[in-house]
Length: 315
Image (cartoon, rainbow, N blue to C red; front, top):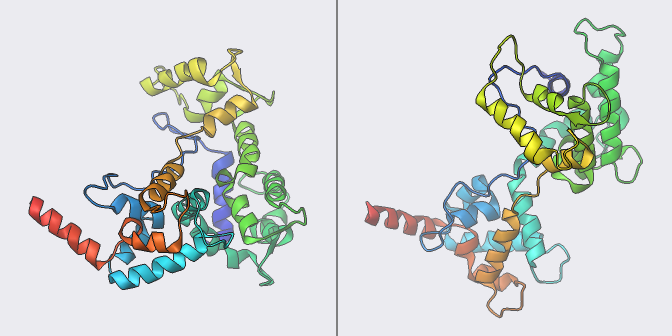
């Protein structure tokens, strides 16, 4: 399957999903946990390593000598210090942690970039994306599969224009990332809500009623009795989703549902790393302060060996 076919397939799945009676579709966007390790610095710093680097990159540091780890950490600090003032603030550290945790997003964009950047100018225009994704489908005015590709293209164009901050219909890599993964960008959240409401609002009255809400995640398919989780979802709609008790969810209520204000794990970890490393307590970190506390941020052969000894002693 080509990337073109794969993207169209994903679009079809997003617009026309038929759920099984026992399936539950989850439209809620949650930030993932920073690590599956226990956050206990008294035992080890594995959680902090995963949070700071991402789990995959954290493993690579375990194979380095302490000197190599410090050197690579120093280079990372230069990237974190985005305003180049010689200090790493809590905000810069939070932004870095969020980026490290979204590596799968950027990897996905990299895999697709060459397919769409047809003229290899380092940018992707709407025309390039449209031609690659929809070119062959738009030539057929009456496709056999019954899908409305022109409608899908109009929806993609609207999202592309929203991601394209300067309005030139040409996307930088960051703008293209926002187009492919709008849930990751604050300025794209309105389009996420709008597309979700369009998917669920079958009678096109601009709101989501209880039956539309349930119908999006559950199909009776001839079954008389609803599973318990469906009954729970009905209660959730009445008690929590429909905040003004008018029997339907408007735009703001839908946004609160699918884009909840979760506990910010990245912010908490950034605060923790600054607190543990800030030797002069000025609220920001120098490269020297970070490298001096390198074993908190990254692993090495020494820390990996030390943790192995702890595990051996416990055994």
